[in-house]
Image 1 (cartoon, rainbow, N blue to C red):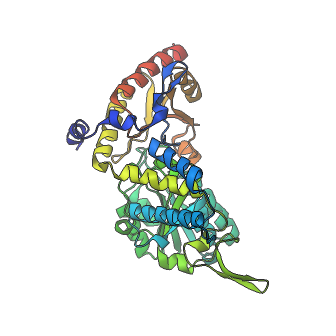
Image 2: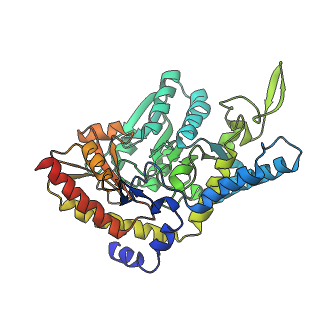
Image 3: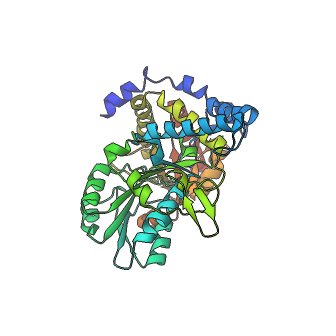
Length: 417
Ligand code: PLP
């Protein structure tokens, strides 16, 4: 697979043309051309996204769903068109299965408070895996505290893969909800969702997929996955911060109570009681991030116009090259060697603190992430406090890989020898 992928990343994918779409990539840091490889934390934005947000505030700004005037009607139409773009992107059955949120974290909290909390009790369990981000751990711990339910964790092995037999052994009629990452931000593992979702649904559990890392690195089709909920963030998908989406199966969303009250989520309010709005508005109390929603749609339009197979092949070739260089660095250990892995390289180096590596690489213009990556249990699993992490996106280049590892070797010599 690797050979054909590497071939594909040549002519099929013009990385220089892509780079020209991202103005920030032209800047320098500490007098060196920026090499941005902190994409798992947030991605850079193409000009079309910046322009879309700019155009909204310059020409279209109005509150949505409320006004009879033209600007409000235009803004409402644009926002609802953005919802349709998101629905198409994840292949939802209809736009009303898409709830706009602040991001993945808020989407997961919405499901925790609105789906899980009213349904779960002391005999129930929520099953997660040992590679989850804190956003897919803490909301479930909170629900467990609120309901008496138990949080059960399926382990990962030394490669950073979920041990499927152990996961299956933890599924039972008590399992009411399963929450799993599509792609691990700390290790790069791509979970075998087909092997995890079908048994969970057969056991009667609802399934939430944390897609924060996956949406621009793997195909996402919520109908094919047959998940009940899928959460993701705009800013990790070339869109703005402060906006994201929750896909929810319509019949589940219909049955769930709202989790926040306010304007827009109601049809009628009186002091005797209120009648809630239809889905998805029932879950969108208050004025939303309108510009964010439009920017997110522009980002998804930008991304879907590209050839996903070529993007994935390009990123895979970057990972292969980076992994080969990493293996040649004395004292370097890689964390996360899943057989099915995205372009995330987590590592440490004997005698060099990850934070020092990050600080010194910054002086070479190289932006990596260091620390626990909001996945402390993953670090605990490997007996470390943190790693240095290089995470690629479609605009990174083979030349950057070489420059990163040339710099890393110099930095290592400074710190260790
Ligand atoms: N889940 C995963 C796997 C992530 O990597 C992240 C962010 O790094 C999140 C959830 C939380 O995303 P956000 O902070 O955009 O809500």
